[in-house]
Image (tube, rainbow, N blue to C red; front, side, top):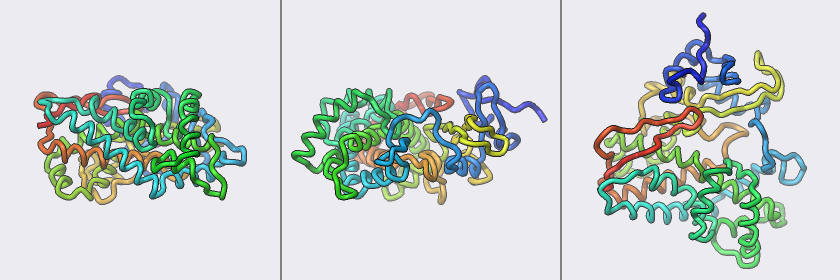
Length: 366
């Protein structure tokens, strides 16, 4: 058998799919020595790995999902808080924040002959919508946007600057709650007692983390896929209830994170304890053993799977915000810009190895 290929082989960043096909067919579990990780590429194997408690995110940080201090630190307790934070009341606040922001951004493009949806819509909508949903000052959007893009992961992370920024807002919401997401967190009492400030900050950070680079990339790929298939876009325009399926299909075909790393807590087959395992979402989503005609974008595919935002106990708590952002963003664009279409000329390709999406998306708004 020939030597296994590597993720670091020339040309992979430009187009990883030939390598993915080779891995799925001949090397479904293989150690990539140049990359320093075990590669898993088939859909069933990636799904199982993401749900395996023996495989954990590497370099765990101090976010509450990763602490074991017996308060809000256990995984189950944190998941319960996230479920609370993304309940009906808060989902409504998030949806309202997305809607307000998406329409503002779309209207700015309405008079333009040409625009770049990545730079002028996708990169701003997630963070600006989270700011609106949390009830934070609009003038702080650029500051929060920088945090979202440069330091917060999908579990919020811990940034002293963010903690200090949120503290006075939390004090005000506890004294005078409103109808925004931060007020909902400040007044929540899942065990009969208000959440401590630390938990409120962590959950607010979860929302902001979900509004970061990954969601912006996913939104860019989603809009690119629909603009590349105007017939499907017209059907969704007529039947907006189909948007959720179109979003899930885009995540399958073009996940914003192509590679999700895990660390083995114990030996698993040939994988030694402590080894890094790379779950190749970009390969798994186009596995012909799981999906018919897997390279084709089909907004109406019956079962697009669910891998892009994790699986099992590692399901990303920011997934609902990402979905709301995609659905609200598309609705605003189709309402404000009914003639939206790709700009003439070459179509920029997706770029990136670990994170992948179009870097630009030139369109004609009218």
